[in-house]
Length: 86
Image (cartoon, rainbow, N blue to C red; front, side):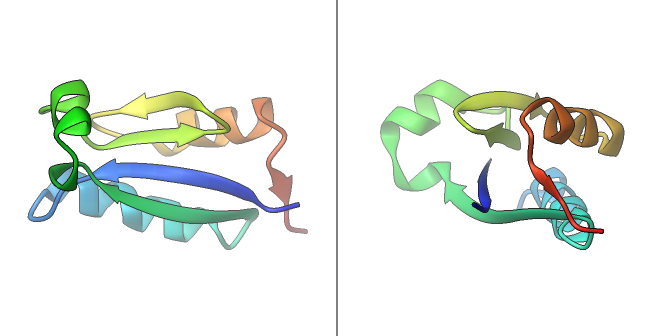
């Protein structure tokens, strides 16, 4: 079963674009789908995340925010048992 990775982001956010590119790169090795959530479409999310974006959530757990590092995402994938593509 493919894992869903949520990317909380907003338009015109260079860190969000970098996080999205990193996730897309990781899709070559890991079995997951990316769901982009634009926080500007929901007042509750704006209140919750504000300037903390991007935020990456895997299986209901926020695993990274702000400047996203590849190693921390790979570690989270392993911890959350995201399928590895051989």
